[in-house]
Amino acid sequence: RKAQFEGAVGWLLRQDVVVGAEFRSKPRNLSIDAEKDAYSVYAAWAPNKHAAVTLAYVDLGPIISGTSASPINPNRQQGVYLSVQFGY
Image 1 (cartoon, one colour):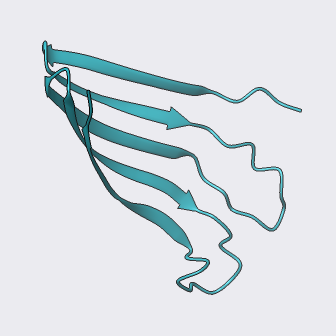
Image 2: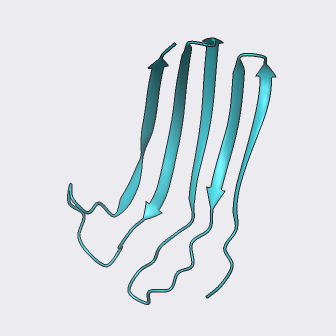
């Protein structure tokens, strides 16, 4: 067992807008796996207490690089995330 670093930071630009980033190191325990650290960057806007919009870019790095890429097991897992929430 080995301690791993994980952290997040956010900056409140205005009362309703935040930007930030998250980072997570991975242990690299498997000799067949070239697993890399994961990170994300995001921006969120909450125009009022009933609505929020979040946009993020996430990069999980290569998952198992010794295999060929496929839709089920891509060598690199990354993408854009969009969330729109409404409620009371």
